[in-house]
Length: 98
Image 1 (cartoon, helix red, strand yellow):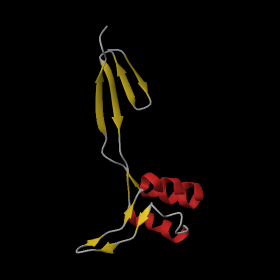
Image 2: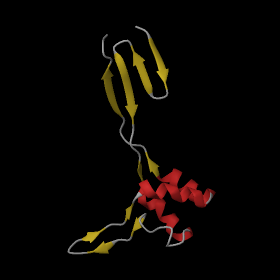
Image 3: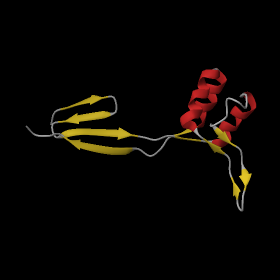
Image 4: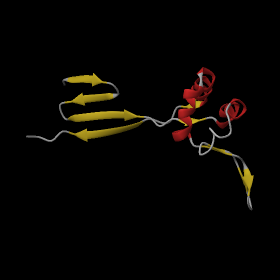
């Protein structure tokens, strides 16, 4: 069987096997960002804990929050250290035969 490895994809004669992971972040480690970041930079990134009929925990929108890395090495270090690797998923795309 012939194959070659390209990034996280494995190309076989029968198709392409792709390995993807989705990382999450540890809110306890991200808490350090609140102390070193201007509140205006956290708008849309961080939601403080609040209580409705039940207590809601804090939330971090890391789709936007990863951009805080541009504010300095300390920010980038905290964000990198807070990553929790996700479970990998495998996707198989069969090649179309001519």
